Image 1 (spheres, rainbow, N blue to C red):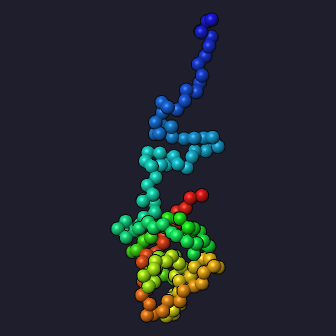
Image 2: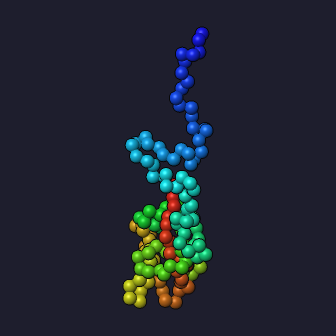
Image 3: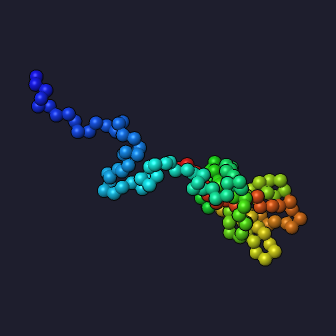
Length: 143
């Protein structure tokens, strides 16, 4: 059989190309949004951490904040350098227990409000051992 009339396949796979050489995927008619990051990967620390020495990652246990999109097993990014203001989700310590709740401050009254109907808000007694440990900036959860 004569092999002169046989043309090789035009597609030879992508193994010969590096990430930088294969920059765009135009399957939908426009370049992919990830092309801006082709030279370097996405650094989640760079994206999620504003103040590295004051930022911590914590795993959430319980369903107190499901209404805010924070679920059991999620990881929250907590910045201890941010000022805890009313309306923000915070990590607080109350009588030795660490809680995640929405901070509510009105006049001289402080409350920790859950984002579920199953739990009641906690009114903070001025004599209680209470402090806001940090402010939640992001929640990370698996789909």
